[in-house]
Image (cartoon, rainbow, N blue to C red; front, side, top):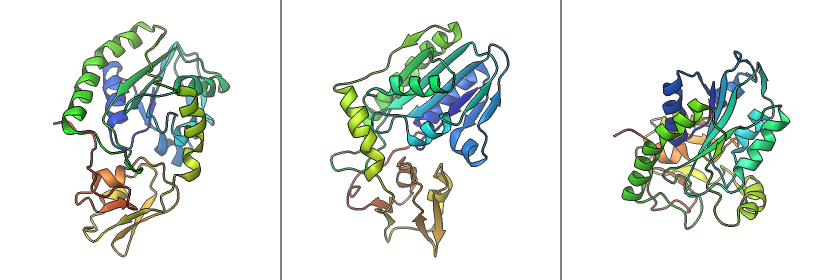
Length: 252
């Protein structure tokens, strides 16, 4: 079984690729939360995986909240996680390892995939250039078979890219991220065509259309799926996203 969360598709691609290799069941974490599905019976010696993007050098709050309520019944043979990031992950592995241990689970392996940047809600942060994004995706696809072989062998392994100052990034910047992150600056400009795609792609169903315009309702996980999927680039985050590009994962 593989639990996953994704907003712009990077982590979904990794989760689906690994799931197909093992014929594993995929569970979308936001949907499981909406349905209050936190208890799972796994067959003996089954493997368990977690796939999600890195937000501010930590697992997203949504993932934290899900794991903190998770009940797994059955004797597992192997537990792994695969994360996606733009550059590095800080202390994500140790943070997630502790969260799992609190639920009686031991993390055996942790993998990191560099994928195109998606967070654009701050000055100086934007999507990667097309050639950089394409190179990241190509390297991730090249790495996937190696990760699948490690999981298949049930090998203890870690290749997480911590980057510089990992403790400061994860424990200071990361912990304060959701204190100031808010969906209040989101708005749709005059280019909005009321297509409703933003409502459809929001993983936590935080957006509705009112009088033909999207409205955000305070439960945002800052995945920016609404911004990146908008066909007219009408959705903006205050002035922070003005003139910036868009990206979401799609097979060419």
